Length: 145
Image (cartoon, rainbow, N blue to C red; front, side):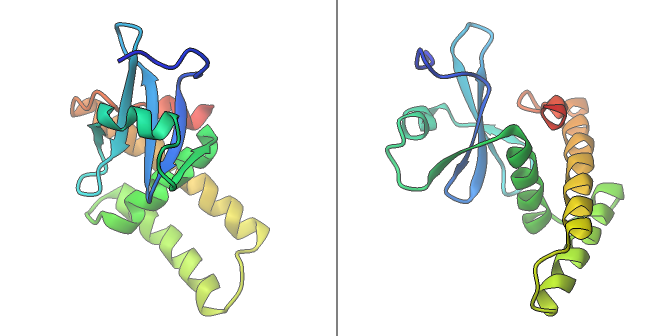
């Protein structure tokens, strides 16, 4: 599939409730990767390209790389469970967010910064793990953009 000529890749989106990225393929075209609700890994879904790029649907939003990282980790933290350091950090974020919700308030600047920092860290950890497992859509460098 060829990328739209004025489309800058990589680009990041929220497609309905899930984070999606479009990156350059090895042949110079584009690949669409959607985070899996089951594994947190990446599913290649090139059939979504036109709907996302041309905003055919009503629930497609372009987001920054930083927002993408935050959305991926919020998504993973919400839908995945397991053991180990990544999941312990997801629980930490959940505890911070839940405490604010129970108190009927927004997170303080310090709490929000802590959540963002933890999510950047878990994104890199998760993506590096996916790379070790051979996931072709994994890219921990997005957190550094």
